[in-house]
Amino acid sequence: MIDPLGYLLTTIRDNPAVAALTTRVRGGEPAPGDSTTPCQRFVVLVRLGTQRDKRAPVQEVRIVARCYGVDFRDAATLAGAVSDAIHNIGPRTNPAGILIYRSYDDSGLGAEKDPDTGQPHEDLIVQMFAATQAVA
Amino acid sequence: MALVIDPKAYIIGAAEVYYRAIASLGPWSSIGATVDDVVFRVNQTTFNPSEDFNGVLEPIREMDYISKAGAEAEFTMPEFAGPKIALAVLGATSATSPITETGAGYTSTLAAASVVGATNLKVAAVAALSVGMTVGIDVVAGGLREYRVIDVVGTLGAGGTGITFRDPLLQAHASGVVIIQTDGDGKSVISPGIVRRQPLSAYNDFALVAQSPSNYYELYLYNAISKTDSAEISFGDESMAGIKVTLGSRRDGANLALPSWRLRVPA
View 1 (cartoon, rainbow over the protein chains, first blue to last red):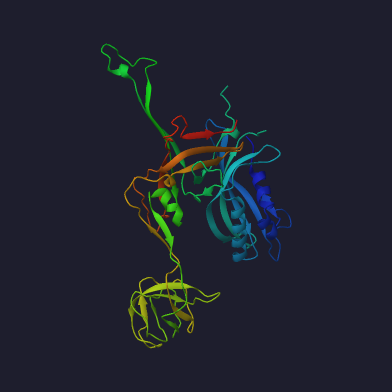
View 2 (view 1 turned 90 degrees about the horizontal axis):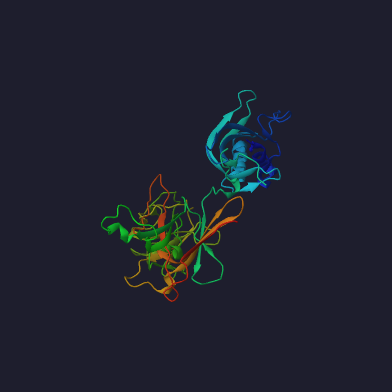
């Protein structure tokens, strides 16, 4: 079963509105140099879970997008741009054949401070329907 | 091994709905965003006369007839733009109420600042004001335009009782901004039609277009008209206002061989 997180990551990273705010979009955890003092913007995508359809080659993937900002307001702005980049966006296939049918901003998890660094971040859940196999 | 379903043949996502005059090749008009699934149905009535034959335990093959068949589509339309309302309510008409801001009968200024939610304004003059008059507030270039119909005319000045109206203000207005009499407030007035046979212009061709990874799925309903039983609009704190519309396709009486719907799917 293929993992569509990477394709979602490039979708967000290459979105002009997000790119105008940051190009630091990561999967799993921040990259070295993301968490700095003073704070800077970056996004971390972490998969919450996948539900695979029993018969069809389709999976529903839920991913949390943690949008770090220089302050709470900045984090909310970045989260809004990420939401716009993925919400209700229709079918697309990347050169590797990874197919995302549609993605949604399914819920906002609100703002909080990172317990380790104290940096504010605003989180949202991305719901995504994707194929479980590459398509031609 | 289980059969493999082609992922590219899947559709996930609601369809967009378009319409245009029947038999027209002009541009389509969108009904706007729909707020739930767009449902397409083919309703058909069948009968098999052998069901009534004595001594026949089950209907007989090749005696099945289609006696009725028609297509319909259902969706919820959240925008109440004037011309669209007739797609749901047969015969409904829409007219935009023009705004004439000449202030011919009354021109004055606010005698005190107002707040959002107020239903009363203090005005510098009350002469020429009357109950039922529409006034425009801050109707200047770049102003925070609002229009209200006066319910009560009181007294002038910052300490007077001013004018009172039903709908609370949506903007805060500063003291001294202009308030003038206007004709109309720019809203669209939607009125029901009369009971009568619907004219040809009441019918439209509709296209319901859904995306799949391989291509677009297109459903065409020809000569379609609203068959909405009850155009219900809910205004609630936790519900989005919208009209559930049911469209039914119709045959062209001049050419009964023409289908009333077509579904075009990617090869």
